[in-house]
Length: 459
Image (tube, rainbow, N blue to C red; front, side):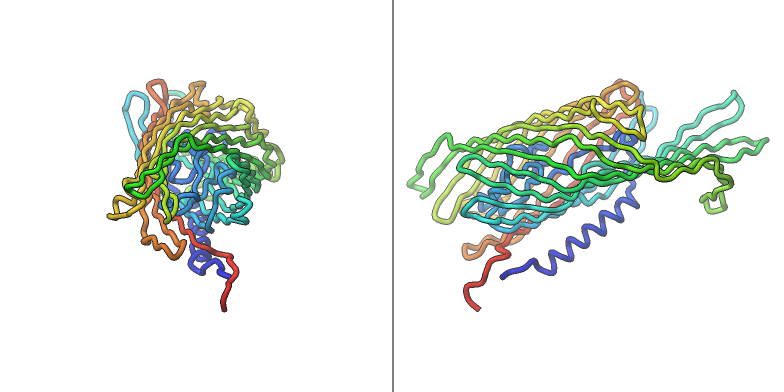
């Protein structure tokens, strides 16, 4: 039988290495990521990002022009797998932070491995498929300084730093019965949140020791989320001149992620420090040192629902998607979020409205390269969950992208290689926000599909 290639194994190992390196070297500076579980972005596939983030009603695997991708946000879509597929995604995030009134700004750039996943059709006859992989759900990374006068004489510089985030290792299965599909993901959510507060006095006549306060919280727990999809044809027409059958289908989708209680431990350290000539510091005296403090972090229920209209063409060569567009609404009940380690965190319930679609000019004949490319466009608007001094933040973005085949389709095999690119521009915050974030993301993912794990008929 065919097995997973050495290239695939090496690529997976490279992704895990990049994930570890990125968590140590990330340069993103988002002050809002210090709240809650961090900058929560749900680890979406880049195809969905390019279409405004829609994923509940998206399914791949029935269209030869797209090859196949893995919609891990809705496991019901796994039932459509017809070949084994491997997905890998990497992104570059650029942010511009502006203080209230635009008096000052700061730019930062961050490289991030986003996801790696493998999807396999267990039974094409019974419409059963499964997938497994790893993705980032949230990210914590900030480095902020604040200067102030103390007693009207001394200057105090406070530096706030944070790092970490939430990751997910998942495995899921989906099955289809006629027009209806159902799927379930499970696995493990795990991560950490490290925060540091350093205080330095600046005085020409007196010497003060600096202080450092550090908290390191590690957390993990199993999770469960589920999804469903229902698809029906609403029109069909034969084009005898072109030798095609043109159909329009309507697909509904919905997902739910159950609430979750993460088990965590916290290490706390408060100390006076002394700087060396290289800018580093060493502990002078320990004021407080506590390790292994146990607690819980309660993550809330979230759900999404949407629809997509799909236009298809079919002939003896196969089934091809010409266009699709739709809309989606999602919400997370963050008001039920609780942390034993940070009891004062009280985020808002969040919601997001999304719309978008994709279009392929000529997927059937493929007369030119660019006529076989899938072009995507999307928009979203909503309210973020972060509670920044009692203000809930607006968030919106526009996105565009393309699914570009980098290996020519051949009628005698089922090998597809698609390069999925996404450009996204958006803003978080507004006129009432202390800090407004403008962000620009460039994302590149690759989808490799082939018939693996198939018994040989001839030796």
